Image 1 (cartoon, rainbow, N blue to C red):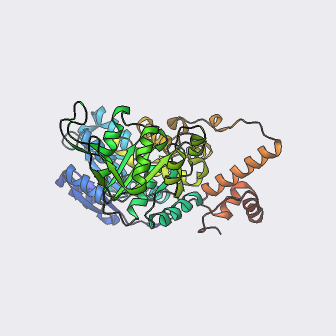
Image 2: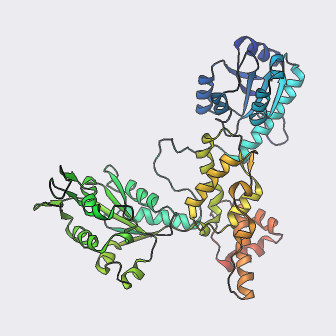
Length: 461
């Protein structure tokens, strides 16, 4: 098939009654259409999960598949699959079927088929499906997929962090991970663990700010039977249960001062006393800590022990805020879209151009956690194929940062933001980005050097 852009073989998944499906397939045989056929919705779901087709054809009507939660789920299973419905005469009067077609199908054809008309409709749908697959790419792994922890992004900020992670993972020493809330500090800790010699051991994450004030010592170090009222049996603490692996202490700045002393002693010789015990316990565990507050300020204010700060801060990794890596936003948003698409029976295929531009320009005070929440809400609320800024709850006026700056500073900031956004929009293709900005390639190179904008090393021509 010649589309002017690509050549796509005329193949589709055909779901429905074997007799009618066979008749439909036979009538289109002279146009070189080939169909993978099934009459079972469960089997069709599995086929789509294993290898999503570009084009799906489904028989609907009084005696065939009818609206149901399973059918809604089936028609949204393939993120770039377009559907064409074959509707028998009885289905022409069913408003529920028309609602299903309106939500999920690219087109519908009445039965019995007019072969020439059906061929043109299917060919048009297949061309559109191929274009969508080229534009949006293959689906990302979902949250349910078994996979190792991964950090998404090709920005220089993320590449720097990944290089730091590789170096840190090779050394068995305490690490302090710094960064704003929602930037992925726990993910960074998991990556350090998975790339270290302790990868086969446990990884335990503890939020120091979420532990009950009266039970923190018991939770971390464990207790013996009878150590306090209600301690009717001995308990192994979180530190001891992480033996041979990695202990991640999130929000370490929230740990009370009296517990900071105990933690410091443990870090010095990896020995501790269970609450109510007279016998020391030794544990081989690596400690990673994270905080969103400035611990040096906390030390000066007397809220954090200076000796513990230096004991934890042997190695340091910094997770960059999302506003420092705008070129990663599209990939991150697409990843989360694929995760949440299954939660709603919707036909969302991606993000509108306005959404992508707005997301790159937005300040993201909540960082990746905020991006996740906005994408999840948009998937549920969106009634079109493409998510709009309104679905995300973003408005351009929110992106303007009002501050007291000189005119030169404002001009330089706007110029730098425009360069970063143009490069991100055009996949770091300098020639295309220059055309987008209406400047020469030489001028864009000069602006890149002037504003010290990091670019991907690939695809710069």
